[in-house]
Length: 119
Image 1 (cartoon, rainbow, N blue to C red):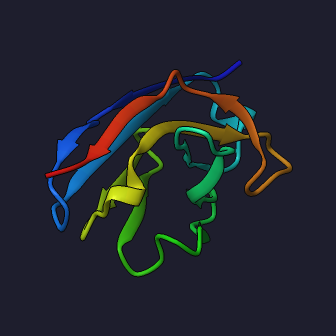
Image 2 (cartoon, rainbow, N blue to C red; image 1 turned 180 degrees about the vertical axis):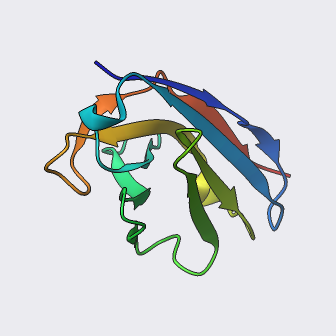
C-alpha cells in the first residue's frame, strides 16, 4: 500500500508560479512512477506530469515548456514546478503513484490539492 500526501496548492495570478510537492510513504517496491494528474470542473482527469523511478519524464501537452517535474528518490518526494500559469490550469491536482509495472497509469491517488489561477 502507498500513501500520498500533497502540499503547495493555492491561488496564483496569471503568469505566476506555484510549486507542488508530494511525499510517498510505504515500500518503494510498491510503485514505479510518481507524478500528477489534474481535474478541472466539468472535465475528466488528465495527465500533468509523471517521472519514473529511472528518471524518465512524461508531460501532458498543455503543460510542456511551462511545468517541470522532479523527484528525490531517496526521500520519496516528487515536486511540480508550475510557471507561467494560466486560468485553464485551474483544477484539483492529484498526486499519483503507478504500480511497479506501469509508467503513467495511476495505481494510487492522493486526496488532491486545489490550484486556482485568477486575477
